Image (cartoon, rainbow, N blue to C red):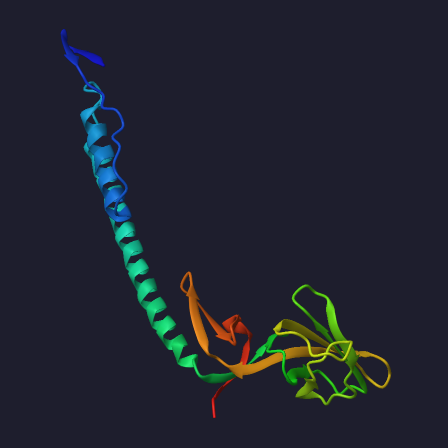
Amino acid sequence: MSVSLDGVSFLQETEGPEFVQPGDKTNLGKDAFLKLLVAQMENQDPLNPQSNEEFIAQLSQFTQVEQLLNLNDNFDALYMAMNSVNNTSMTQLLGKDVVYVGDTFNYDGEGSVKLHYDAEAATSTSNITIYDQDGSVVYAGSVGALKQGEGFVEWDGKDVNGVFAPEGTYRFVLDGQSPDGESIAITELMVGTIDGMSFTDGVPMPSINDLEFDLSLILRVESAE
């Protein structure tokens, strides 16, 4: 760009955008702001230069940007430290017996299985339905009356044909009625010893017999006997 001042012409270069390699996000933010500030000063109109007040205001903005970036780095470091402590504490659940809300279990193809529940009230009649991984009914039948609160029913492991179900993952559903025929809310529960702990994106996921479940579903933790 050409600028004329008292009959003298000045040839003024305008720098194009400068590409930088990806790196540390904090340094990139501060460096980019400084480069923009310097480029603005170098390319300002000589006939209308930036005032001292404007320059001080921009320096103040840079200070604020730097402080925010540094604060963000501090928060990142604090988050990583807290996450590390949390993950370490979660490993203490290994070997603990827990009761958690869930209806899915692995069956080894042999013998019976205890299936736990929490009934809102006592039932006069109750039914259980067992589904396989495809959602097909493996077994359906009556389990009689259930007491209020936590308890368990026992599935003998056999399907509707009286044959032991194959090894695999299954799901159970319980429903019950009061003497008046009203539906009673029943929550399916799982009970077992935590034997695994994985960390996906920093989130701990406990598992029992290769089945993962969310920590928020745990109702009670006890020491394994």
